[in-house]
Every structure is written in structure tokens, then in C-alpha cells.
Image 1 (cartoon, rainbow, N blue to C red):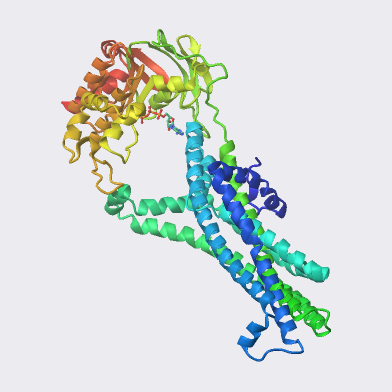
Image 2 (image 1 turned 135 degrees about the vertical axis):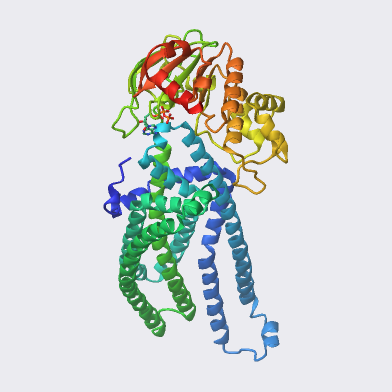
Length: 619
Ligand SMILES: Nc1ncnc2c1ncn2[C@@H]1O[C@H](COP(=O)(O)OP(=O)(O)OP(=O)(O)O)[C@@H](O)[C@H]1O
């Protein structure tokens, strides 16, 4: 996929037409969303497409027949006499046919709407699921990359609401068949009529494409701003930020920033719209002149008896419809091209492949892990970051031991944990598990063997029970296990106070949701670690909001329950850290010192300094 340099310049005609290459893939998505419905939708459209010309032709036959009848030498005066004369047989047949066609056409129209709406829903559901599934396979690194976020954002925008492209493609197919049927009718009379029509329309068509391209390019260029606008709108009016917005009186600041961005957007948009107005008015006037040229020929040919009155009505009817139809087809085409261009975003996103994946022949993760993990001179730098988050990091995490990580903010503790869980791969050095590179193992099994609770764990707006169950979502139905996990983290006491207990919706996002305190959320999150029951348990400071006693208890219990398991805990509280079998002091992304609490206190250094600082605070 070419990167989008369009940020600087609008897509060319070529690029827009090239985007139509996405249509087969798009129709495949439609087909996969529901094959039966797709067939029905196409069949109804095709049937509907040939109705207008058929009806107009029958109309022409009716007029010619009426004119033939009234021109007869002996015509009855009364309607009843007409009826009895037996002359109206053919005419009645034609009128009945016209009525029948009108009824069927109506029914087909409703059928088309029905299948369309259903198909829309199906497609939105199926695309949303695909986007979610695919996003789940991608690397964490991708999500931290702004360009990727823009891409994801655009892909997601396609899957929310309705997907105009489906209607456009189907409508266009229908219109094209209708146009072909009318054009065939015109050809019978005079091929030049068709040529005249095309000449009238092409300039307007190109104009339309051009302006669509400009608008798309502008929207594309402004993805980042649009994201910021969405963000401002959200921060300005959301439950999560309401508290701070009030306290800091941020509303005016947020609103002005939003207004400023949207004003720039608006001004640029208006510029394009004005130019479009001018050009399109000119081009359309040119088209109208050509139509009326054709019209003059039709009138002349009828006066000179080249055409019958029936032919005249058929041709003028065809002309009127064709004009509308062709304009529709051409604008439809250009609209479709710009929608198809947006599909590039979706397919780009689907083409994005994760770098962190299982190797072709993956090793199974040993059970139990016998030796543990060895970091060998590991270095890692976040994408686009100048600084190494960790570098020359070497240490061993023995199977079955509890290791604590301490260090000041930014020392690299969380990064170490992310590397251990293979959310990232090291840029330098390697990490071994039981003597083999972590990258050699099956990724799914590796992740299943790890239970990590991060400091910024997710507060799911779901039931309390589900908030625990996410630790091992496969066991969601196992209430006893959920309650046991909640008991071990102390979350059971939090849940006991909720009006609906385990079924209580927590979080403020939905009606009836009960919000929890920071510490209460943390207890729910820590229960996930017990729910998971993984070989390696990692708590990355999810206890910061707990009071000292609660944290002590959490870690005490964690230590007991992780007996024989490999565990890593990160905390800034020494009362908790000292429980670990071994402590690693990190500074500037490397190991500065290690040992037991007693050993580290016995030597001068950062650990003793920090410990004494904290102890002094409590005295
Ligand atoms: N997603 C990220 N993108 C870029 N840089 C990052 C990212 N996350 C962390 N860093 C940087 O990497 C370094 C190590 O961060 P890390 O989160 O591992 O520290 P930490 O020891 O866990 O800190 P804390 O005690 O504050 O949680 C820091 O300099 C930080 O700024």
C-alpha cells in the first residue's frame, strides 16, 4: 500500500479510479456477510431496473392505439358503445398490463429497501467484528503509533453507522441496467441521441469527481485534527473528566480550542463548496443546452411524421428519465469512487500484520516452567522514542521465586514486565525462558501462562462479576471460582456492599452503574490475577490507591497464594517489597543492585536511601 502523501495533495483521477479496484473485495465482504441476502438483493434490483422502460414502452403502445382508434372512419360516440364495439380488446390488455407493471414495480421497490436495510445491518455487524478481531492480533506497539491510530480511526468510522457504498454500488448497478435499457430504446430511433446525451454529461461528471476528491483529501488531511476535536468533545462532556473540568474551570479553554479547530475546518470546506457551486453551475448549464438540442430534433421528426405521437411520448419520456438517470449514474460513480477510496483505509488496516507472532514451528510452553527467565543484555526503545527505556538489562527470574522490582518513576519497571509478557520484543539482547528465546514459544500459550495486572488496568463498565471474570474469561460461568478469586483479593467485601452484589453493573458509563473508589477498583482488578491462576503472576503496582494496611494484606496474601509460583511485584512501598524473596533495584533502565531486603539495607545505595526516606515519612 502506498503511504498517503495525499495529506499534501488531493488524490488524482487515476487514484480515484484505482480505488475502484477495492470493489470486488468489498463485494466479497458483502457476500460473506450473507450470501442468500446478497443474491436476493441483486435479483430484486435487476428486476426493478427494467421496469421503467417496459412501462414507458407500454405507455407508448397505449397512445399509438388510442390515436389509431380515434382516427378510424366509423367511431362510436358513447363510451358504452365503444365497449360493445369490441374495438377495445387490445387497448384494455395494454392498460391492464400497465397497471400490473405499476403494482409489481412498487412491490419490487419495497423489496429492495427491505433487503438493503437488512444487508446494511449485516455488513456493519460483520465488519465491526472483523475490525475487532483483527485489532486483537496486532502489536501493542501499533496502538501507540499515531499514524496507526489514524488508520484505525478511519477504519472504524467506516464500520459505524451505515455503509453508503453498499447502496451506491447496488443503486449504480440498477441504474446502469435501466440506462442500458433506455439507451437501447433510443438507439432504435436514432443513435445520435445517445451520443448527444453523453457529450452533455461528461464535463459535469469530471467536475463532480474533482470536487469529491478535494473534499476527501481535505478530510483525510484533517484526520488528526478530527481526532483532536473528538477528544475535546469527549473531555468537555464526559463522566470521567467532569470532576476536573469543573474544578479547574476548563470548559472555556476546551470549548475555544474546539471552536478554533472546527472554524478552520469550516473555512476550508466553504472554500471548496464555493468553487464547486460555480463550476458545477456552468457545466450543468452546458449539459442542459445539449439536451434541448436533442429535444428539438424529436419535435421536428414528429412534425415531419418520421415519428408517431407514441414515439414522441416514449422518446421525450426516455430523455427526461435518461437525463436524470445518467446524472445519477455519473455522480453515483464519482461518489462510489470516493467511498471506495475510503475502503483503502479499511483494507490497509486489514493488511496490517503483527510483528509479534508465533514462529512457524513454535515450542509449547513448558508446564511447569522449570528454570525461569533470563534477561541477557536486553535493550528496548519505544517506537519513535529517543531514549532507551531499558538497556543492558541482565538478570534472572528463577522459577518459583517472588521477585520485587523497585526504582524511581521511569526506571523501566513496567517496560520490563511488558517485555516479559512479550507485549514487545527487545531491540537488543534476548529473553530466555527455560533456556530458549521467548520468541520461539507459542504466543497464545505464553500469554496464557502469564497473569499481569497493570497499574493502569481497565475498569470495565460491566458487572462486578465480569470484572473479575476477565482474568480468565473462559471460566466466566464458574461462579465459585469468581467468588473465590474475589475473596482472595479482598474484592468480596467491596462486592458485598453493592446493591446487586456480583451482578451489579459497575462504572458510570451505563444506567444503574455504581462507581467505585480507586482502591475498590484495584481489589476487583487484583482478583483477576487469582481468577487467572497463571504460572507467572505479575502485579505492576495495581495497589497504589490501597491504604498501607490493605496493600500489605494484598501482598501478604499474594505471597502465600503464589507459593511455588513465579511472581513479580512492583510497588513503591517497602512494607510490601520486603516480603519478596529477592529485590531488583532498577535505575535508568538497568539493574543497579539486587538482593534480599536485609542484604540491600546492609549496603549503602539507592535502596537504603529510598527506604530511609519512606521510613522517615512515617515517623
Ligand atoms: N508507551 C511509551 N512510549 C514511549 N515511551 C514510554 C512509553 N512507556 C514508557 N515510556 C518511557 O520508558 C521509560 C520507562 O518507563 P516505565 O513505564 O517502564 O517506568 P516505570 O519504572 O514503570 O515507572 P513508574 O514507576 O512511573 O511506573 C520512561 O522513560 C518512560 O517515559
